[in-house]
Length: 242
Image (cartoon, rainbow, N blue to C red; front, side, top):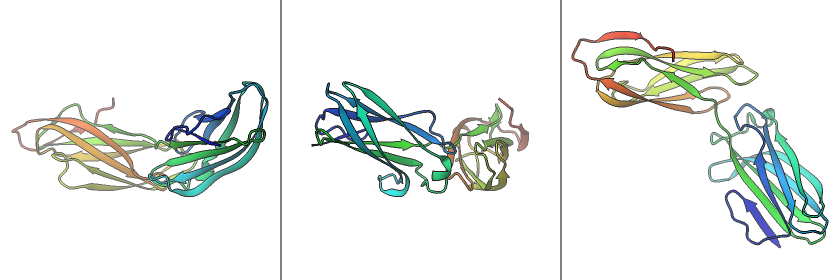
């Protein structure tokens, strides 16, 4: 008998034991991915469970790309006992193998020695990129040039290079703006100024995309209210710090 426990598929048939994965800590790119396999004996008899565990970097369609973890363990469960098996994928194991989707699938194939029941436990984990911070002046007016600022803080223990930012926004920026921003050392914050000259009043959106050697397509969006103005073009002060 085979039973599947997953965050994407419902169990097919109830077995005499069950399993699930649980995250242990954060899920940010740049840190170790720590998670727990929880096995529960649903009956009063003692069981010995053979567990084969794998983790793969996957695409959006769940196609596996790179194997990140492979392990086997035997778990003995007493009457109605619940056991936790801690697992970890170090950052250096996935840093150059993670597709742009930032998705990892963990899978445990479990076999009970006594009953020959199979349980397959799966979970897809989406890792989060670091956040971008967008700062804009409190007041923006049509035909007045202002300076917005995009900040990126490097969370890694190593320098990131080849930083490139693109900015666009209908009614805010005439053409897509591309800025090469160099490198950022570990723990430091990169601040990139962006000149904005709105040509239309109303609610506008500044859309940012940031890519570097270790992170791809970090996106951010800021809603901006632009006030009408009939005065000649002039420049507003740089973005205020909030």
